[in-house]
Image (cartoon, rainbow, N blue to C red; front, side, top):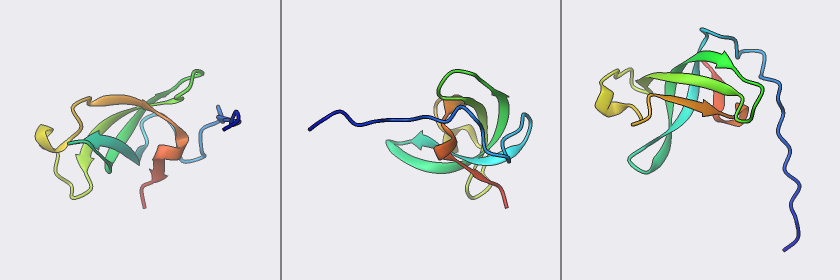
Length: 83
């Protein structure tokens, strides 16, 4: 196994603006799943996007249905536009 080249884009996708509501992946019970999240800020360091999880995919805002860490820094690859 050789070195793998890993690149990160420091540019956020066009739908990622502070206070926007988007889909973001997070951890719940050992599984990565999608949650509705609000973007708090964009950072210069990787991971570049700081989000707050607000609901699960079914619209449940109960704290037990959200990730243990209510806020997280995520990469653009873990985000999707809310349509």
